[in-house]
Amino acid sequence: MEIAPNLYAFPWSSSTVNNCNTYLIRSAGKTILIDPGHVSCFQHVVDGLERAGLRPDDIDLIIGTHAHPDHMEAVSFFPAGSTRFALHEDDWNMVRELFPLLGGAASLDLERFTPDFFLREGTLRAGDVLLEIYHTPGHSPGSVTIRWPDRGALFTGDLVFKDGLGRTDIPGGNSDKLKDSIRRVARLEAGLLLPGHGDILAGTDAVKANFEQVERTWFAYL
Image 1: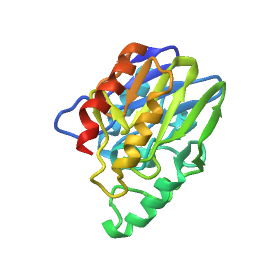
Image 2: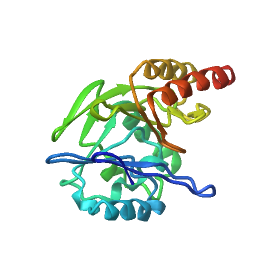
Image 3: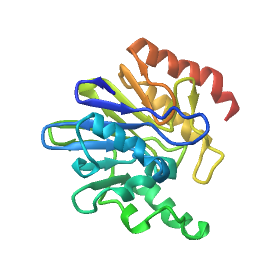
Image 4: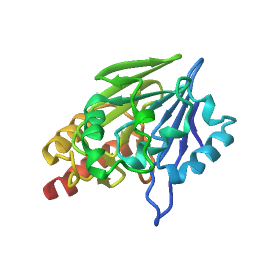
């Protein structure tokens, strides 16, 4: 569904199968996909792209908010070479360290999963879209939050959700860093909160109130 001009959301709503929300940005000259999700759930992305008049090979750039399989496994479905893939280097290092310990995850094509370039703190231009990249570790070492100032959109991955926050009881998680990252992102101006899971929040006041509620309710448990 188109939630703002040239910004689409493919929300995942199943209560029994874990997968992430996927987001699409269309710009002059570049088409960007954020978090394509699990391999087993990829038809969900295909269906969303079809509703937008696109196919997987129309995607120019995939941005990963972090490297957990429920967000990035389906990178392997996109054509190498024509579709570039960007991830933070700290999460790529985590993937390389954990992959042998997992016996080489059967559904993860490690070669295709290799980023074409690393996301770094600062701005990223794709076509006529200028994105802000923030390194926000805590859920994983290389988690990033993406802000599209022209739409007031904040893509938070698994940093923060509507009424919740990301887990830290997994390899690479760090509770103190998660709290610091949430406090930092809460200072950014945003009228759309686009999390990796759960409902989208619209409205500057609603987004601000959610950050305040998350800190007030959940920080004591970290």
